[in-house]
Length: 425
Image 1: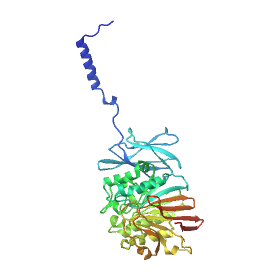
Image 2: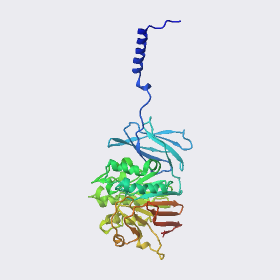
Image 3: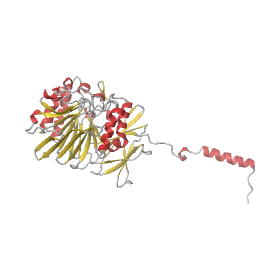
Image 4: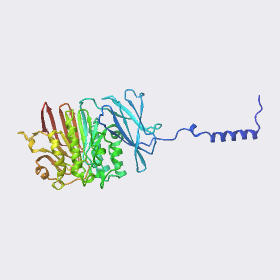
């Protein structure tokens, strides 16, 4: 049996071992990094049946990555490389688009830096043809988001847990570049709603700081890339997506902020593009959204330049829904030319003005009636969310308060070339 080392030799061996362990390469240690991703948002590109765009923030990474797999084959993971789009408030914004997806299919995904990833989220691609679905429509959230607007948002999500899409008509926040307000907005929807539901948004005047679009807008709400190629801010704000048989068209109505010296040219650029998009629409349904209403709920808030530029195009193409906000009240109507013998039925486009947040203004029907339109429903001091169900040739629109009270409702029925809009409340 070998002799045991003497005490001095044993001490030397122990000391040598300790020094060796202390100087071992760091790679052998357990990883200590954690995922820092937040504000994950899904945006539908032009063809959401086969693609999806993801945006998110992190503490900073040079290799933003999305891992994605079919929900029925969770091990069939592929990595999608992303890009860094901005660094704001000490956080880095990223974007990535997954293509080659299968229509009407559940997917799971997570975002990260290529090595460390956050939790898995799920979403469903749209069908490659018309398919029944539900979307939510929110007016200005804007003020007192956590205490005032978030309860309405959460009521909407609870009432319609299977809604595929959320549509926003501007003034999501009050101060365009306030990171704390954007944090409130994301918190109002929660990680499942932002990470698993598509969001489509038009900018409002409060998404502008003086004459500049919010630095956070494009990093959070990327366009489909098919909008007008000229005109200030239009490539970052105007676009369309074909979603389960509905063509959604987003316009930028902020001519006072984006084009104060060339408003007519800027609005006409969008009108010409809109006319082409509506002419080429292969779908049964069309929804157009922007912030400032063509018919204001207050005569002091007239948007005559918008009516001059866009109203005829919307009417000529018989757009189904024109969704707007800005007036901090509720209004719904149509041109008087579309009246029928039945007082509860009309034809033509439906124009709506809604508000989700607690900021409220007074109402008056004068701007509608003075410009050839009629107001069918109008009220003030009421926060609402709107549910729109689309199924074949029937569209059902319902406006509710946070407690579920229905305050407005109508259906649009299309039978061949005929179209009837029927008040149901």
